[in-house]
Length: 187
Image (cartoon, rainbow, N blue to C red; front, side, top):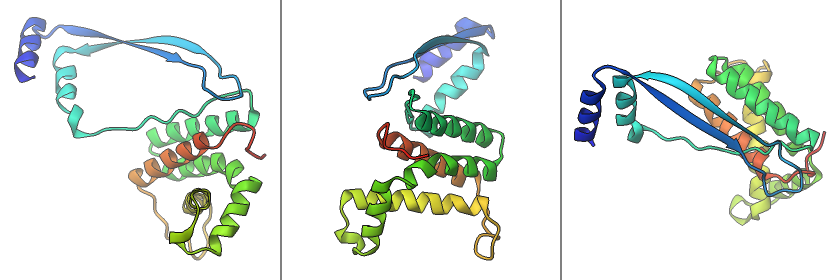
């Protein structure tokens, strides 16, 4: 790879590269209709910049979580809140990002299914819980973890959330919202 990079760098001789990113939103395999759209992002990158970034490809990774935006208004609101939380995270506003993600999780936490499974899980040893009970505990755990950003009581007043904490909470909430089917969420 290094010889390819050097060759590309020599050919470019400091010229700028054009990068084209094409995006497409595809229908989700769910009952609701997903809004469809396409777009292209054009960017100019200095010749050496993209190669330096390319070298770092193995230095980290990320996970994409698709949260379908359907005509289901509760799911659409949850998806919008996750987008807002990501924006706040990029701006370095950890507590507001966490509070916004928490609001996206609330419709899941309040479903009769999750309430019932969480209640059942509290009476069952962790190793004996069903998969549904374990998901309900995860929903409750992330909601509770995120609640520290929204409250300032004797327990939560000392809570401080780092960027990594915020990323983990926003990503987990996005995954949980994506996991629960359209129509099952409560207002």
